[in-house]
Amino acid sequence: MPKRKCSRNDLRKDDAAIRKKYNTPDTTKKGLSIDDYTVGWICALQEEYDSSCRMLDEEFDDLEADEADDNSYTFGRIGPHYVVIGCLPTGVYGTNSAARIARDMARSFPRLRFALLVGIAGGLPTAENDVRLGNVVVSTPQGSFGGVVQYDMGKQLPGGCFQRTGYLNGPPDKLLGVLPVLRRRYNDPRQPDRIAEHIQRMNDMPDYRHPATDCLYHTDYPHQSGTNCSLCDPKYLIPRPDCGGRLVPVHYGTIASGNSLIKDAAIRDEFARSEMYPLCFEMEAAGLMNNLPCIVIRGICDYADSHKNDVWHKYAALAAAAYARELLLTLKQSKVAGLPSWVEDLSHASPTTSVGCSRVLPKKACVGDAFREKSWIGDSPRLGAHIEPRLIVGQKRFSTVTNQSPLYYACFIGLAPAVSLILEGGADPNVYCAAYGGSPLEIASHLGHEAVVRELLAKGANPNLCGNGIGTALQRAVFGGYEAITGILLAAGANPNATP
Image (cartoon, rainbow, N blue to C red; front, side, top):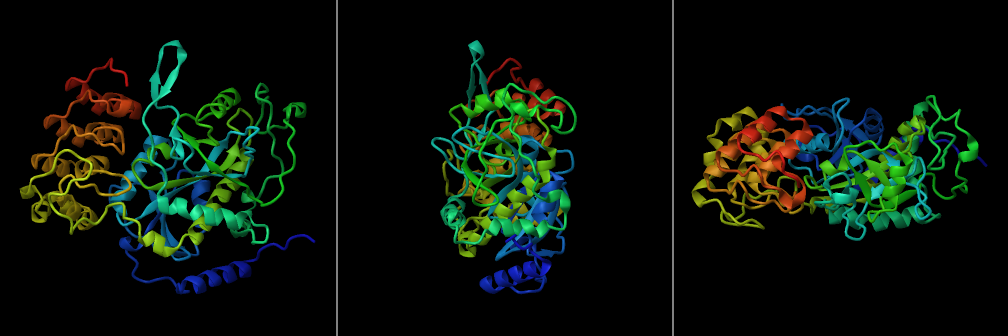
């Protein structure tokens, strides 16, 4: 008997059940503020944004983000959680762009507890990992890797060898803790296929339906021509058995992230055999993992080869969004409430507290009134209300997840006046940030904060420091395409021949 399609009435009943379970009102909550939103949801492409917004039980009126924030946002609720969905500007992607959206979201929504990075990726199928188009991959720690690996960051050694350097944080423990429950329910055939039910929320959009064909060709057989594989010889297809079980198979493991779009089957297979054992390639996660508590959810849209599978992009984005919705519905509200916000409330902490840093600001620099007198507070009311009071605590980290000092955090979001004030209080401009693997000057150069770079150099920052072998400030400025900062660093004595 064919499965009955889900109607809009079914969706309304589903939403009503969720509201009843979580005692959530059936009408749009009035008077929501920035502080009510606890979950961030980040997308890079339009199809990812569209399918993600369909996962909301309710959509609320827009709120005004920070004036320097160029991203698009949609506000809503999934189960008991209030969610802000952010999308990068059109045509902007890559790890650097992801780092900038992390900066903007932390500035605009300081009370968020964690983020979901939801979108599409290229799969790495192997005999051990039967990754297929339309499947979902979730970043989880494997061996020495935290769930995401930046595969293109490291040293090029003699003999053509490439040594990866640096490391990335894993997802928050609270999110990892809910995965066993979700996996058990999803793997139990007696339980309903909730992800398939969530996918039906876009049944009215034909472009997002499951495509009919999934073709994996031999590594040495490239795409012939055209916008699809109709001219490719089927004798070069790799035979694979039909998949049974759930509509959307889900894989857990390592995701490879970098600034290059991989479309070469030979390179794909080389990475698949490496020590990383990645399940997919994508282009944003490495810019987020050390800056925000985050878990990455990717729908497989191609096989990272030359063949054309564009027809899968929208469905893959929808599959990832459906999994993300199910994750939030499984996650209890009390677990989220127990997580620190991105800008941890330190208003009651001792002004001489230090966590993981060598310098402490003198008590005279820890007076909130001194910060409130600065003109930059008035330029950004929300920033003044949320971030400013938390800069009164010496080298205390802002977040137990990201381990960022006030100086590093001010450099991360580009607050040059705050950087100046913190440095005047005695902070070390060359202090090493273990969470990111670099100095304040390196992160400011990486994100293009010219005024911050000038301030740090004026206060004695070393332009040739190289934290954890990831890259000097000059290399990061060049990598990001920041010509003005490149010139400033060279004038300050940065070594143009330095290697990480």
